[in-house]
Length: 208
Image (cartoon, rainbow, N blue to C red; front, side, top):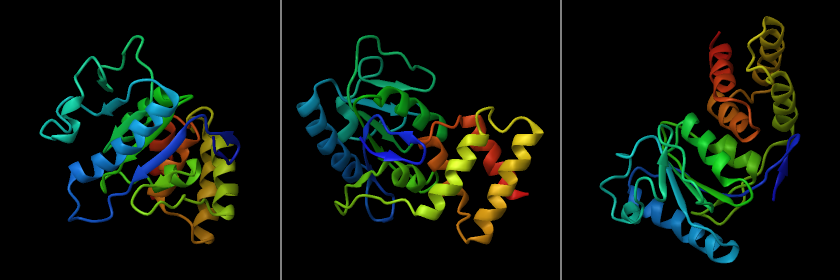
């Protein structure tokens, strides 16, 4: 498992970035499933698909192997009793990613990214393998230090004013250092187990 800022990542990670408008979703999904099937063959278990709704990927031939309630779950239907194994997070929102992370503990997680919900921060924190290049994502050491501070202040979802003020200070420092990419910061916090509410609060604070 990969260890990054202040946390041990209890799953192996990979991703397919959405960096080419000509690449179709089945091509991206096939890459993800090839990696996940290898993980399942090595460690056991059943590959599980996690999406926002059962309609996501419904027309995909590659994803047709998944059946709702058996090896496909959503944020509205998140229980698969007795089913464990590697997880495919397909074009995840913050809520989908949180569910996928919870399901992947002790196993593996692959993200098929949508450009509308960037996941590069998550990939950097987890040291995810880019399945398009074979390279492992690396987290900038300066960014790591700022994320450590944000995670420390985020135990209450940045609800108390004192925590919000401290989070703003970190965001100001990130801006000064030229590192304030909100999408990167938010998905990195997801990898660090900051709640979805906390992620949304950081996005809100960064706009002020």
